[in-house]
Structure formats: structure tokens, C-alpha cells
Amino acid sequence: MSTDFTVLDMAGEPWTFSDHLDAAAVMTFHRGDF
Amino acid sequence: MAQRHGEFLGKGARVFAISADTPPMNAAVSQKLALPFPILSDPDRDRAITPLGFADEKDPRQISRPGTVIVAPTGEIVYSVTGRDYADRPDEDDLLGQVDQLGLPPTTQGPPTLGEVQPGDKAVAVEGLPSYLRGAKFAALAIRSRYRDVGDEFRDDLKGYVQMVERYLEALTEVEGRKA
Image (spheres, rainbow over the protein chains, first blue to last red):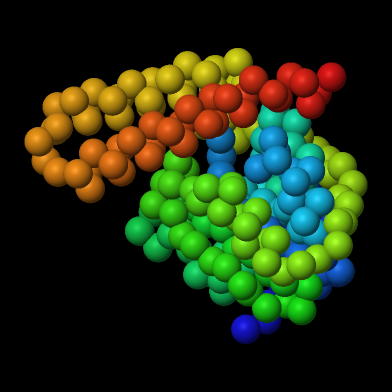
């Protein structure tokens, strides 16, 4: 299974996962608002 | 993760956090904890949180469940785990071991760029986090004491919770160093 998606970075700009896959990625998901 | 960010880079993995909060809320958390990696925003949960199986359908706040995914440079998901709460996270040694198996060269990750910074209504200031975490720790210890006869699984689970909270407390001691 491969994955790709576009979310927003902390400046509110689009951020596409596959643009950063020249290395491995450890993604941590958070409940937020802390 | 922030404490051991350099170790992940050394094994060829960058670190990214994702939540359903807005970019300004994530920027506030990043600034508060001086994180060396970005917190990405999926406010409608339809880009990454739901497709990757982390939408918390039982919580009315439309948030993400805690979880960790490792993706190889090929795009293949090689590891995925879902936690039950903020203190139910995989051991970082285990994650580093998973990354190490990919056999990748070291990589780099520049400091994250912040835009507008706006903490959420429920955000706890960094000065308040030690008290918050110590309260969580002692509540867990009290419950463990009250229900000591329930069974090993319950006791071990609470022990793991306490150990993770202690790791968070230790991590807080390094925040000021990263800000310096």
C-alpha cells in the first residue's frame, strides 16, 4: 500500500507528502489542542 | 520524538506530526515545545487522518486518534499503530528499530516555518504542563493502588501509562534547551 496526501503546513500552505519522500517518514497523529 | 529527532534523521527518516487543529493552533504547539519538525493540519480529517484510519468517530470534537505510521521512500506503509490516548505511544527504540530495518542513508530536515500563532482555547501553557502531567501521573498511581487486585494486565497497563507520562515530563526539561 502506498499513500499520498496534501495537508496544510504551519504557515497555512499546502504540503504534499510525496514531495518529502526522498527519505522515510515517521508520522505521528495527535488529538491536538494541547 | 523531539528529543531523539537526530537519531531518526541519522537512520534516514524525517518526522512529521499531524492533527485536525488549524495551522495557527499547530504553530502555537510547535512554538511552545520548540519542536524540530512540523505539525501538519488536516482540519476536515479527509486528507490523511481518515484515509489512514485515525479518525476518532466516538469523539464529538472531530479529532484524530493518536497513532504512528512509518512510510518507506517507496510510499509503502511499513508500520502503523493506533493508541488509545495521548500516553499510549510506541516506544521510540522500537520505532528507531523499524526505521533501521529500511537501511537508508542519513537525511536532514530543516526547522519548521511558522505562520500565525494562535493557541486553542484548551491549550495549556508550557509552564503548566509539568503540573498537568504530574496530576495525570498521580491519578494513575492512585487508581493502580485502589484496584491492585484487579489483575496483571490492568496493573501493567497503568504502569505503562505512568512511564510514558514520566517520559513526557523528562522531555519537557529539554524544551528550554531547544529554545536557547
